[in-house]
Structure formats: structure tokens, C-alpha cells
Image (cartoon, rainbow, N blue to C red):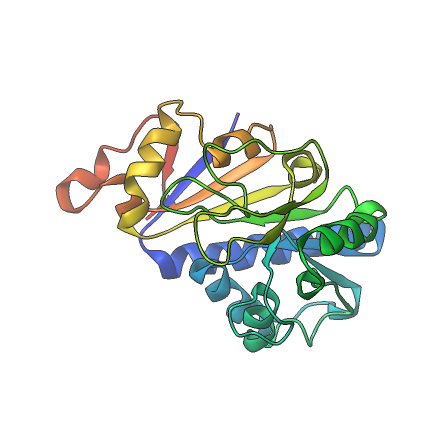
Length: 236
């Protein structure tokens, strides 16, 4: 069953996520000597990466992977890998494995499939959620091949060609952390909680997922803040 935790705003979501990732890293390094983290795109995770980049970690033991990537030139500023590099996080870690999406979706998917094979199970998979309930590049109303990494050629958002980890690869982890901020996500959160078949609901159908959600994503404000839906922990 998914664990839900609500935070006051996007900044506190990012602060708490940074602490949780640091704890997961220390645990993984103590037990296995390495921390394998799958990164998500989006503005909320970027706030986490900025915080992580200035924190104290055993960086040489960290390995970074990606949940998805846009098929754009390697140095394109809208690539997830470039956005992460801009935060300073990528240059700190021991190993950084961007998806080579500049090769084209199919070629990049094949190469990354081989890359992640020895990395699984991941220690932590970080996910975000779009306004339509998508996560990584798994979009609603699509058929997804049963592959750990595959090409996407018809994404509803530009660019249409992308590379994404599949459901089973994302689920193959010790811990899954989902970050949801912004009131534009409120409708998707309610659909998710009411059993609508969204991509994020499918991916988080595991017993090791934690969702950190900003209060206004739940439509809660002022005096309504105390009436939190069942299953969500209020944190003040």
C-alpha cells in the first residue's frame, strides 16, 4: 500500500525529499557499498537536486540513472541530463549515466537497456507526476511494451520521441519516492486516489512507494487543511 505524506508547500517537499534521499544513500552505501539513484525530470525534482548538490554525501559511491529522456541533441537545455548537470549534482557523483537519446529513440533504448541491467534493483527511484497523471514518459491511453527500457514515438508533449524506463524497471527498486507539487496537479491526484487507471497509479502499485505531496495538490487551504483525506499523514 502506498504511503502518503503531505507537506505545506513545494519547498518543504523538496527539503524532506533531500533528507530522505540522503538517508537512503547512507543505508545503501553501508550495506552494499554503492547508491544507485534513478532521477526524474520536472521542476520539483530539480529543486531537490539543487539541495542535494550542496549537501555532504559520499559522492564517489553514488551512481545516477534516468527514468526517461527527450530525443534531443546531447547538449540541448531541455534534456533531463542537462537540467541535472546545471544543478551541479552530476559533476559531484562518482558515476553519471545519461540516456543517450541523441542516438534516436530505438538505439538509445537498446543501449540503456544494457546499461541498467547490472544496476538493478535500484536503491531509490525518484518520480514526478504530470497534470495528466503521466510519470517518466509513460503517458495515459498508450500501450507500453514489456521491456525495461523502450522507445516512445508518440508522446503528446514535444518532442514526440523519447526513451523511458518501463513499469517493471521503475518498480525494481528498494524504495520509490514520488514528488507532487502545484495546484495544477490536484485533479490528477484526486483521480489517482479514487482508482482511475493513470500511469502513476500503475507504477506505484508496489509496497515500497512514498508520495510526498504539497498541500494545495489536495485542494486544501486555510481551515480546510485539517480535513486531510484518509491515508495521508499531515505534517506541520
